[in-house]
Length: 435
Image (cartoon, rainbow, N blue to C red; front, top):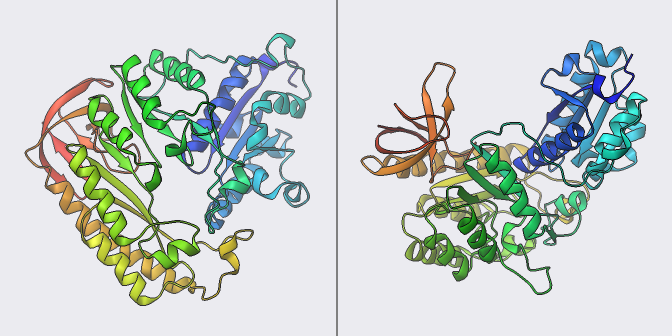
């Protein structure tokens, strides 16, 4: 029987994107601050928190599978509380409590700061009063070589296919002070690269009075933490400003890397998505970026099989990828999500055709992008050493490789956390070898 907080061991299981990983890390900080212990072994934990993703139906299904699997653990069957947090409770609200009887509590994104109180209540214990509502949370736990930092939450775009505004709410920037403090804490614990993320990073600071900009934020951080790499993900095309390009070009510790989700290149489909742009506009944007920022790396994401997409429009999308404007291309088949405006659009593409188009686009992207990666042979690059593979092979990442999505660089020397200079000797698809 658990009598107090210090006796309780809590496990967290995270589904979904890097933004959820950040949310889990913040919940873990609150739990530690209140005296809970954390464990990586959910089957022997006193309580389990599953931070769910519900962006698209497949993510919801994956989250449900994780919940049902955890519900079958011996400790949960014996009474260990199972707490469902994150996107699923935010998206489905009160409907979950009647349907998902395996869980004892539901914590939507907006209530995750209350996680320690929820866990304590589920375990039938009281929190120490002096830390029950701690705001300034710090930790002495070591970090990985890279860490994600959220600079805002929510979204005001309301793209017709997207559930994020309904899950995360309206857009709001986090203050510079809170971001700077988090970066300072992470770097003090060993982080060498900070990856700035949000649903719409390019809008940071525009909701302040007076307004600020993403370029200003990066400039400030790059100056204050001059030994730390900074990388920005999820910048919508409108967020690529001349001011931002100049800041990235100015600072060697800011990765010359832009992740720009385009989703499509046909104006009529982009309009149906509640987005803007065209094939020519995006090609011009890429040209402008490459003219302004030397040795820049570009990533995008595209949707195949959006309602109404004709064979001709899909071929145009394929042609765009074939041009090799982007070093990395992520491809998703359109997911029809209840509650979005696109759900009821006419001319829905059938599942088999969507899958075929998505795979066709991936195959083109792999062919084009792997050739671009191979063109890096004989180039000299700085590589941040990350760790060892299971077979003992040392690896890291160059500034042209974002964590988890762009492959790694295998190296033959260096210490974890060190930045070393290597010459690229070989590549295999998206992986590189340097010495």
